[in-house]
Amino acid sequence: MHNGTDILWQDRYSRQTKFAPIGPHGQVEFQQSCVLIVGCGALGSSLAQHMVRAGVGEVRIIDRDFVEPSNLQRQVLFNEADALAAVPKAVAASEKLRLINSQIQIVAHVADVNAHTAWHFAKGADIVLDGTDNAATRLLLSDVCYGLNIPFVYGGVTGSNGMSAMLVPGKTACLRCLIGEEHSTDEGDNCSTVGVLSPAVEFVASLQTIEVLKWLSGNRDALRQSLVSADLWKFNFHESSLPAPSNQCSHCGDTAARNNRKVGASEGRIAPIKMESTVVLCGRDSVQVTLPHQIELDLMRRKLEGMDCELTVNRYLVKASLRSGESLVLFPDGRVLVQGVVDSAKAIQLCEHYLLGELIR
Ligand SMILES: [Zn+2]
Image 1: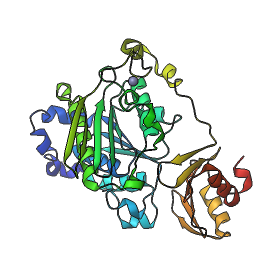
Image 2: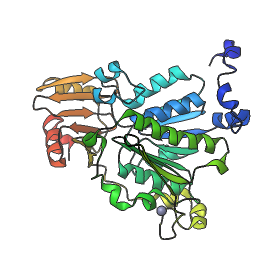
Image 3: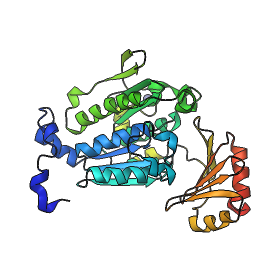
């Protein structure tokens, strides 16, 4: 806080409070709001920057990954030092965001958003922003948001294409109804296979942000009730109306019952994943192995130092680059990101070899 220099900061938000639909009242609403941003890669970085600059009172950021050189072309909150030190994205982002605005609360978690954790992170948020890179997490977030009656702002980017929709429980269909279950396996194009251009990212982040500003400032009538998709390279734009909630859907249908449903009861609708699980990460030649317990980073660092690999160590993770080309990235929450493999069996085999047999039961 800048107590002694309040006069200097009094017009900090003047350019958005002078915008009539927001006004000073909207600014107060922003300051009293909490926004959850899931994923802090390209979209998430841009979304977080917009929220922090706008003066949203609490900005929560969740990301499971760390900064790599291939991120720097489009992920606006990161720099070369972050990539060299393999800093977790949530940590690197929060450091930059605190420099942008010290007058709000920024809460960053290096964590996986899954069926266990999503409810916890979303509770108390006024709106949830999609900064993820895979359909499975998006669909989970949509389910959670509809269970908790929180709007979900969907955004996705590949190549020069982007799309976005603001999904509001009780008003519009959920993401499952919108994009369908067939997209839940991520077998289509993704950023690793077809690339992604930064203007497409910024375009989608802008589409998402403008709806958030409308929602938080109470301008509900101004919300765009459509799915917008665009190819910026070809300059093709398409807009289609969002379907109404479907009574065939257990997530967005039956509004009255959903609104009366207790949160605890709705949590049970998502089958919990096994604690010891593997997730093949979308198009990244990576598999995430979740161990049944937390990882003692210092202990693992000492063990790996005696093995045939090169280590990158910081407060948040240990990265072991193996001679054979793969990397193991260990996080304290029990996750091991195995890079350079595409199947779970190989990932588990490497974990078993390098991380003590008894770690994998
Ligand atoms: Zn639905």
